[in-house]
Length: 266
Image (cartoon, rainbow, N blue to C red; front, side, top):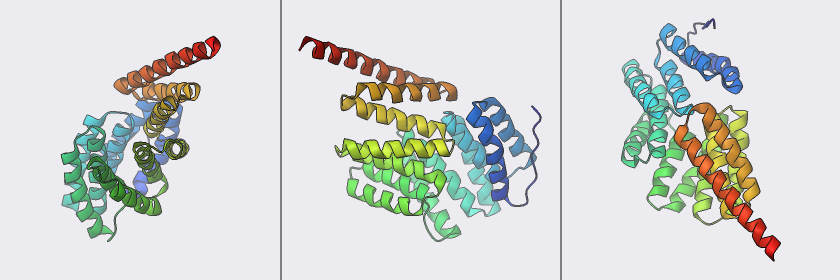
């Protein structure tokens, strides 16, 4: 595949052009071509913003360890360039990964640094920072603060950030024992993820929705969302998450079969 990258004077414009080019490839499932395009971009336009975009791509395709290495390098480069906005974006992505893998202390370290750089660059906090702070508050058992932070995030979220807000809100509602509200938020997250071509977030939303529906004994719907999550994780290469989806599907199928037998016997 011939890869052509337009040079852009502004890093933000360059990243927007890069995203528009790779979006079609990601939608079609050609992740290898998308990765070649990102790698060519970081070589032809050696900017921290391009590296952050590549780090975002790597975590989107379930390669978190590689993403962290790229994002840490991008943070150093952006800091030396005096680009506080890009530093903050990189730190927020790192914090999200650390939360995902259960490394709360590292996540908090990145959050605090992101706050400093965001306030320096714009004077306010982004939705990504607020969602990460909400995750820290929820992990500490402070559901009220987490809810307040997510409400603030909802007000300032851009389109690409909204899916993370909805996922976090859905998780909080599920923990509070409000399955109807949680399911509604997870469904919104699925729609937002699809519109933004965020396949990993779509898979996560579907998997969490499937688990919720299974607990509510809605086994057929749980199997449907579980199957879609499994296919997405298979495409993205997330083998452990694909296996987790398969276990949930098997559990829902067995529970549904048992339920049908029970109904027939009665």
